[in-house]
Amino acid sequence: MYALEVKNLSKNFNGIKAVDDASFIVPEGSVFGLIGRNGAGKTTTIRMMMNIYVPDSGEVILRGTKIGQEFKDKVGYLPEERGLYKKMKVMDTLLFLAELKGKTGKEVERKALNYLKRFDLAERKNSKIEDLSKGNQQKIQFIAAILHDPEFLIFDEPFAGLDPINTDLLKDIILEKKEEGKVIIFSTHLMDFAEKLSDHIAMIDHGKIILQGSLSEIKSEFAQRNVTLEAVGDLSFLDSEAFVEKVENFGNTVAIKVKEASQTQDLLKLLIQNDVKVNKFAANEISLHEIFVTLAGKDSNNGK
Image (cartoon, rainbow, N blue to C red; front, side, top):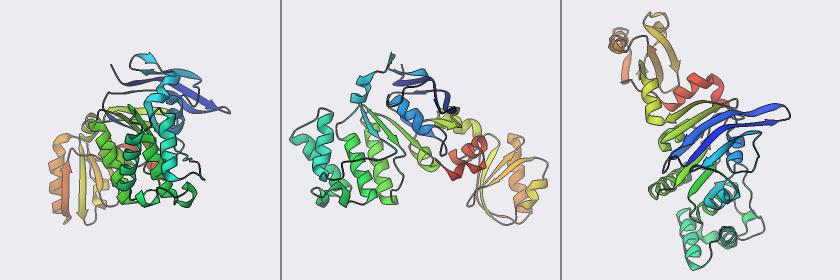
């Protein structure tokens, strides 16, 4: 049995289909990435999973039973549009939101202070929310989402607006929660984060799920006949080479697909013959970014 099953969810807004018959499964104890560009349908899907939006059709199954209002009590939720009580103090905010989830007492306060210390915010515990930067407000809302020790953690674009240090800290805490057996679902348009964190993914584009499953199995399938190349030199000769099917330049790396798996060695020989300095040549390797661009189009970097 899976932790969650999303079955045929659809949602229209003013005649525009934001989510179109979306289905995917979230295994127990996994980190699940819902990935896609801006406007792809990620947030609408998550809001239907949270019962914030009522779907036009479809359902969400929690361990074999259709979800109801009680699902919210099992979830720590970080919405895409952050919102806290601006006039409240930091610690008061955290304790209040934990109390709404049924958690009170000294242990919750101790945990809240420990999280504030990890995010370098302990000295701001008596500051008003409105006096914090947007990034620090986001960190407070993230702490609020995990403080009551929920079974499920659902984060909508959790890394948006964070600097690299706090991004790494968020990733560390998410992986800690995975080790505790929590089910973690997050949406992102940042493929490198999705690739580093996810066990399973669903890729959504124009409201439709265009790919889903185990990340390792997906990468293995798409990596066939693929070479990831880091090199110095003119590669334009590859465009006219018969056994080269496709060349994609990603800046620091180039993805090359050959027509037959056996031709990867021919490619390496050809590069050397053309005086290309090869710094990295990885056959049968592909990034999630490359898969996303292949399936969703080259303009995928322009949004979430």
